[in-house]
Amino acid sequence: MNPSIAARVSVALACLVAAGAPFARAEDGLDADLAAVRDAWAVASYRTPEDRRLAAFEELRPEAAALSAKYPRRPEALIWEGIVLSSCAGARGGLGALGPAREAKARFEAALVLDENALGGAAHTSLGALYHKVPGFPIAFGSDAKARAHLEKALEINPNAIDPNYFYGELLFDEGDYARALEHLERALRAPPRPGREVADEGRRRQVEALLAKTRQKIP
Image 1 (cartoon, one colour):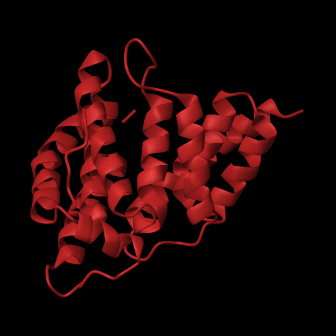
Image 2 (tube, one colour):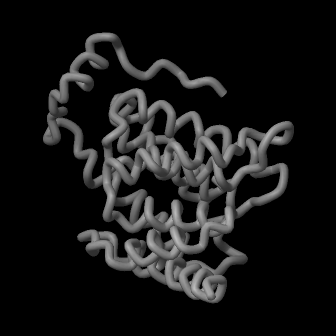
């Protein structure tokens, strides 16, 4: 599981993004700040006992919010704040999860306005997973149709990546389409390693392997 979108970009900036104009990287140190949040999230997700995971995500939440406040025009910062928020929602569960889930949705949508291709389409991947995880109307905004649309767009942008293939495989498994789920989960396992993301890759592969075993049991 994982409000209206605040306007985060001027018309001029939107034109630059649409034209594919690159942002200056040396101006802001974004990479190092992103890596700090990203690596802390990986440890919280995959190296922290389940009973302490929510506290770990909540401790990371102000740092993620500061990141997107510091770089309001950068979709990467918004994506990572959204990932932390959606992780808080998932760890919290129940009705208390709906607030951070809605905040996460807003961050991912704001990132899409800036650049839907950022981080290999990660805003589409994360938003698709969120739509699949949260309850639907009237409780919340969940929608498997919207989940499918975002995950398919993520796969169009980054077809061999581990995350969109895993989450799309999970959606297909939950829909009972085990043959196609198997295809995407196997593709997720073949995904190339991500430099600097060793902890996340190891944890995600364990998730892929667990779902893959369940999927194979469903196929005659």
